[in-house]
Structure formats: structure tokens, C-alpha cells
Length: 258
Image (tube, rainbow, N blue to C red; front, top):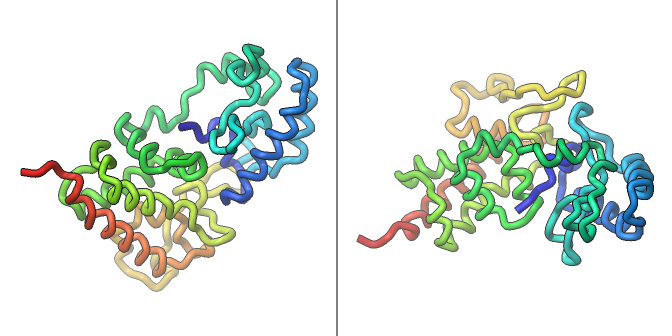
């Protein structure tokens, strides 16, 4: 499973599925007709960059050579990679060079355990939701911890072999897709500051007339439940609770008998 976050796919104001899909499809259509030479790809990349959405975080590069690898438009990847071009490597035509692309590892690769990453991949069966979830380490851990508290046991990869639990966990993760328009929670617990750099957010419960915070603060912060977000704190809190309960309800079926 690939999400394209390292290529800047999620560095945009509108992270909705239709918006990102349209941008990826646009790039794919253009690059499909481009001659497989460095000069042609450099020119195409420059033209695609001009027509793309403005980055939310200016310091994070957005590579216009990311697109769909398959006709079904379900797999995201580098259209300049030799595997996509009959062995011709055109990655130097993007915003990074070949050496950087080869050496780069997503920060989530270092911060999440192998099992945590595998759980996210198994639950999120498409590139869009997977990208929103896997790039938000705090959200993944908070969601799994919330399920564990209710279920009385740590979530393990084997538990996702039980279809009802896998579906319930996917619905919990899908909170990342269901933010209100204009939410600043799309990049988890961070928002762009005045200079465009990430700034840690917190929910100002007192401003919302709440004392004592919320038992789901980590999840709520990651999905954007704060006064600036356009999301309703009470409604989101109730929805988080409902989805956690739904996971716990079917978790029992994942355990071996006896």
C-alpha cells in the first residue's frame, strides 16, 4: 500500500477524496502522453506544478510526477520511476533527485511499530484513507489505545482477520475522512502557522464551555475538534465514542475459543 504522502499529496488545503483523485488523474493523463525523456518530463513537471493546488505547508515539496499506476486508478505511485517506464528512470525531473527518493523513509516508518503500520494498512483498504491515517501517528495510537481500553486487550494484527472487527476499525479510522469543510484538523494535531510551518494544536475546552477536557482528547485533537475547525466538538465526541464501542462490541469474536 502506498499513499504518496512523501511526494506531498496531502500538502493541500482540500484533502477530500474527490479533490485528490482529480489531481492525481490530471497528472496521470498528462504524463501518459509525454515522451520518456528527461527534457520532456522536466517540461511536463513544470507545467503540472503550475496548475496544481497551492501547498498548505510551503516547506513541504509537492512532486507533480505522482499519479495513478493502474487503469482502475486505485494504486498511487511515482510515474517517473523506472518500474513505471520500462526501466527508464526519470525521477530527477521531479522535486527530488533519485538519491533522495531511494533513501527516503516516511517518518511514520520510524515512529510506528511494524504491527501498528500493518494494522493501519489492513484496515484502510484504499490509498486515500490509508494516507490520511498512516501519516498521523498520534491518531493511529490513540485509536488503537481507545479500542484496547474498551476491549480489555491490545489490538493485534491477527484480530483484523475477523471481518466485523476489521470493518469497525476502518469506520473508526474513517473519522479522518469526515471532517467538516474548512477544518484545520486535516494534518492531525498540527495546523499551519503564520509562516506556513506546522504548529501544534490543542482543544480549548474552556472556550467551548467545557471543564475537565475529554477522555478522547487525543483522537479529537487529531480529527480537528476545536473552535477553529468547523467541526462540532459534542457531535464528534459522541461519534468517537460510538465507533470505539462498535469496535469493542465485535472484538470478542476475534479471540480464539477456549
